[in-house]
Length: 489
Image 1 (cartoon, helix red, strand yellow):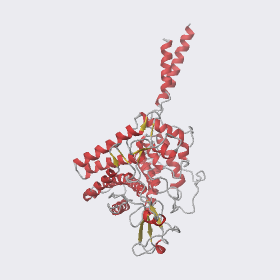
Image 2 (image 1 turned 60 degrees about the vertical axis):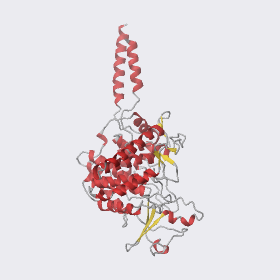
Image 3 (image 1 turned 90 degrees about the vertical axis):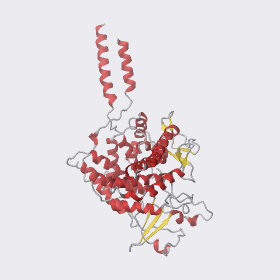
Image 4 (image 1 turned 30 degrees about the horizontal axis):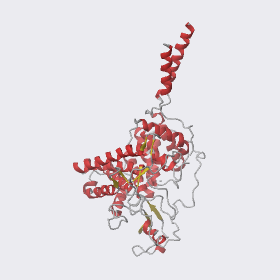
């Protein structure tokens, strides 16, 4: 009997370290807490929205364009429009900002962002390239832009490709769009969310637009590997991009099911969503390392030696299958991924010490795991550092959008009660170094868009470690039995 009990104790002890993620709502703040964040970020979204409909990374401001030989546009000389406030527009980032604003409205039951969200959708559709205007001959892509707005309301829209043209007299200008696949996929999601949130009739005349965006995804789909490459000129199948492409196909299927009924198109989108998901599991998951590779080539070969101490792209991309719904939180791999991220980067992420930007998008993975304590620690840090203070670089439109997405989800779960008092003295929130200009330097590149260490294990786990309590109790019981038996001998 003693041997059996010892064996039982050994088994329980071995099982104890495995974290079981379970929902725990004790860490969720009150509705008033999240409402304040959502309202503040909606105001910021309106500030970022430009008269032409585009949404800038940062609010417009006058920036130096010395060294650029810029073209005359619509009869306006560069000497004039470069004196106007300008904003950089990267549609991938703007998509997340608009998505967050729509989620905020949906949570609060308001329509604060409706007009500007619609203006952005119309700007994007208006800016979609034709096969003739796209560098790779793909209709439906959208370039990155610099947009100038005069005090009297005039607008100059300049693609970054044209802006940098003079610096590449022999060709090879790389400034077009960061990706073909992610831009189109994220915009399909926006079309669906707008119809769902504000206007069920909006898509009535948009069937061709949705189909064009699907064609963009298929233009970079590699049949051999079942994944999309970033763009025709960059044959890398990124995990991040393909998670977003999966979301795009799922959204397109929903559009052709709920708003533009078409069984054949819906089935097509469902098929490719599942194909992308299967390829990510079969070609990108490395079972030996218990992680995903960040990218494979168009031949399906991993492009990275596993190094999860590298935050971008390797450690950060691990969370994207959770963010975009490809991985169920009950999948045992999900706990492995989240636990490792928290151990390796949890503290640094919450301290905004993982790269150029805060990486607010990753909080959505914590929410997918119902890890509300971990998520709220990060949200509170963002609230103190950026939301309650003046928004400034490196907190830009996509970061704000991700915080709205997270706060909207938590608002729905939050209890109705008095708001938790917060200290008036915010001196504990040390500000990041603010550059002379909050807008990025026009000649500097950002981190790759389809994103954009230490091994500290001191992060408090916001989970119910279900096995641990049972282990302690069982161990105590076994020890007591053994002591009693020993006493009888």
